[in-house]
Image (cartoon, rainbow over all chains, first blue to last red; front, side, top):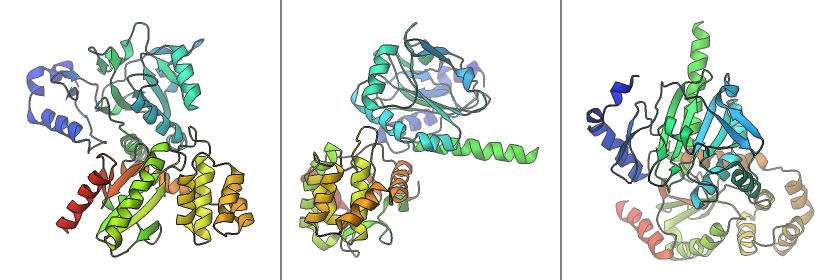
Length: 209
Length: 177
């Protein structure tokens, strides 16, 4: 998918506004963004969220005050990226708490889950301790929001990541992405469906070999 | 998601009210969640007002990392259910949310005249863990993102959780039927 396909005129068509209405209605948590065009929920700003088929931008971020994690370390396993606005904010507390309860389910797909926000590693450590989180929180802290920008989910106005989900396959290709309204917990159903699709596709590919 | 996932299954779920009731209310909850405890008297009032028009079902959605007592509490409700008193334990757990240690669960079993030894043995050996997990997973697939989450005739209810708004949403169902 080339950059030219996400030019603005193409975005101002009905599919984009349908996406938008599904965001507002909060009904379709597994909304598939198979193109890169979408509208930031609750605003009139168009932006480009990386969609299915795009190579996931590489990154290396702090996961603790003295450790870093790179995306390519997960190659060979599916990865779930959960961008969220801020540690300790009410909804994402719920969202991360929910994912924390689902690590076994993600493991059934051999998938790795990481949370990302612009908070620093010390803040993440306090948040993870308070909520007893058993998965890494990455600090998109310096330069602030650089990774979120590279995925098209940085909110310039608030200076935070949007509430966005990406499922990346074993080869580092994005297979599903979703942006939730900032105050709405997107849940985990969309992630599980995307992981199931990945599994089905890789089984089909293996069978064809 | 299939609609049936978010409708009470009278064969499997703990249900209260009339099976013939036109309105089906399903709650996903956690006995240690303060918002669920807040919703409890509201559910009771709705049940009182709607009577036989309502079928109410409860499924477990414990967030065990942030609510360390929620798993044993859910086990205790199931264990009481195995002794034919799920709802008695369910009510006591919500009414006594700040006292959910194992010895408290034993005391509630005693209060309900259940076999306390059997109940605590089942709780501590996680006899109902699989069923509780089934509840949890069905919730995740059905769109439960936190607790409490209610479904009215299979549709998630995201409105305010007070008697007035609830009844308004529920009565729409009666009219549509």
